[in-house]
Structures are given as structure tokens and as C-alpha cells.
Length: 305
Image 1 (cartoon, rainbow, N blue to C red):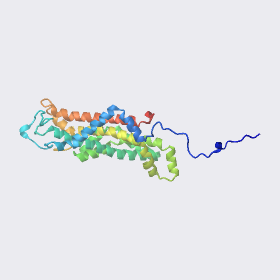
Image 2: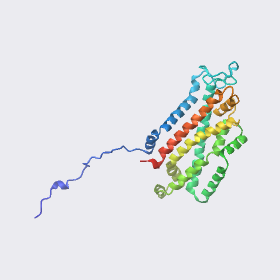
Image 3: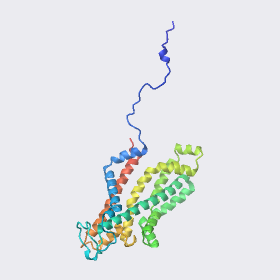
């Protein structure tokens, strides 16, 4: 005996009747990194301090009546007061305004040098890692030779040849400070060029330059940002040291290194002259290092849940 089949069993399936509940909204790569970066309190504190120093250096001079080159010979070596919160120097110039303008120069050196190093290092390391073979061997041996020479010595030699000046500092740091970035990018490219998406791009007819600049380098953006963040305070330190030994910017311009060099000559009688530029150098370098540590943890794929 054949049982009667319920026609409801063969009803057309038009829509999903079981509701799907998404417990967590999807996050992009940058959103996920930002969420984990916010959990690092030291990194957030460093970011806030960096923003404050940038505003202090670039906007602060508009709210004071003094300029970095105004002299008051009757008001020399004046201790910090309400009129001159950081005191005055040997020519009666307001130290607060000079620290502000010095921050402009030091931060500009840090950001510009890091940007130049990023361009050179990313292109150099990307070509070396992607092409490989004999070209990779030659390019990496050049990097090894440069690594064997202290970076500070290379910068000093270039500054001696080029002469003091802000533009020459950019050139010197840009030509000598890119080797670390090149090595990091090369290592990332060596691992990424064997991935499936690279093979798929090659099968679709993409050229070498398209694969390198559209697919491989964008996938190394995390390590690139972290390395650039750590290079900014190093560039600021190198500029401060060069200015301290007389190879930095020329008068009447003054970076934090120049102010520290001027203040050390009168450190026994007027310690505030070196205290304020030195403390800004220390706080800036420490803040960038905190931000760099936070970015490294945020972009590290091993820390993803």
C-alpha cells in the first residue's frame, strides 16, 4: 500500500526561514588594528603627547608676542617668569618661542627623513625581494656593506661634505638611513610572492611592476608603518646630535639640538637653558617609541584572535 505524500514536503524553497544572527560585526584590517591599538594605554598616551607637541610647535608661536630672533640685550639670562615661562638666553631671546620653532625643525626632519627612507627602502627592498636571483644578491651585499658602517658616521661624513643646513640634513639622513626598511620589506616580499594571490595575478596577465606595487607592497603596509614610526625619533635624535656638534641648521634658525648646544655652555649658572630643549627631545622620542610599540602589537597577525 502506497502512503499518501504530503505536498508540503515539496514546497519550493524561496527564502531562508532560519534567521542568521551575526554575533560580531565584520571588521576591516584597519578597524581591527585600531581597536587593538586603543587597548594599549601607553601608545594612546604617546599619541596624545605627539599631537600636543605638534600643536605646540606649529600653532603655539601664533599666540605669543615674541619671535625666535627678537633680542633684548637688557633682558639676558632671565629666569623663567610669567612673561618668559622658559626664561631668556644670552641675547635676551625668549626660550619658549625658540623651543616652539625648534620643534618645527626637529619634527620636520623626523617626518621628512622617515618619508624619504620609506620611499627608498620600500622600492629597493621590494625590487630585491621580488626579482631575486643575482640581482637580489648584489643589492643585499650593498646593504650589508652599508650596515657595517655606523649610520651616524655616514651622516656626519655627508654633512661635512654637503655643509650645515636643513636641506642637507634631509639629504644626509635620506641617503643613509633606509637600509633597515629595505631589509624588512625584502623579507616580507620573499614570503608574499609565493602566496596564491600572487600566482593568480600572474596568471591573469599582471606585469611584474603591477604585482609588486599593487599586490605585494600594499600587503606589507603594517611592518612599513611600524618601521617608519620608529625611524622618526631616530631621525630627530640624529638631527639633534648634528646640531649639537655644529653640523645642523644655521643661525638664526634653531632646532632642539642647537638650543641644547647653546644651553650646555651655561649649564652651571643657567640650567634651564638646556633643561627645556632636552626634556622635549626625550618626551618626543619616548612618545614615538610608545606609539611604535602599540602599532607593532596592533599589526602583528600573531596577536589576532
